[in-house]
Amino acid sequence: MPTSFEQDSNPTGKWGMVIDQDLCMGCQACVTACAMENNVAFVGEEDAGYGRGMAWIRIERFWNGTYPAVSTGYQPMLCQQCGHAPCEPVCPVYASVHSESEQTNVQVYNRCVGTRYCANNCPYQVREFNWRDFVRPATFDNQLNPDVTVRRRGIMEKCTFCIQRIRRVEDEAHSENRSVRDGEVQPACAQACPAYAITFGRIDDPNSAVSQLADSSRNYKMLDELGTLPRVTYLKGGASHGGSG
Image (tube, rainbow, N blue to C red; front, side, top):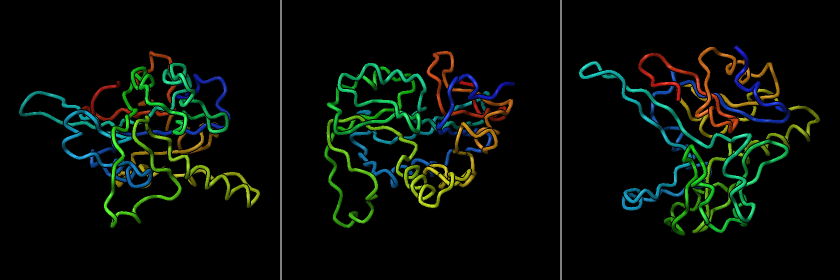
């Protein structure tokens, strides 16, 4: 089977992720770690009831079988960092753009005017609109990550593959006159996963762990038929872990 990333004609300088659904147990440690790392606000029960959630990654649940032989499967869903991203051409102010160096979907917050066109055009529904200027208690001041901006009301937010961590490691490697080592960059979700279900690395390195995992016969891309060229590859789980997307 060809590698899951082979469909992209120019994979140089690209980062990707593999999520093994056979290992994911739905604990949501990745959701919490992402919120802490990226200063994602917790909206509370009332806003969540109106569908105004802010999580950059969510856990989809699948139910298989019939009662009483019912099993549950889980699928972490985050920005797929599409090579041909539907969110980019519809933004009237070019706030949703493609990074030339990392080849990821970048959200430029100080350009965004909150039209939500990008969210409407995203088939994965992974972009969140910031409805409020959330006020954190003073005791939470030290919780904020100084490497990540605190977003204002009225803009779109989404997963960035923890771009601040990528930049930090790239700068350290450059100062030491070397290349970034495989596994040296870990987004918060991968670092926090107790089951090691999330693997992150360079797609353009055939020897990287993420490239080798993507060669698995279990690989698939979410809504691959749309031609968005996602950078996230899923590995199908067993009979109890949902379908192939």
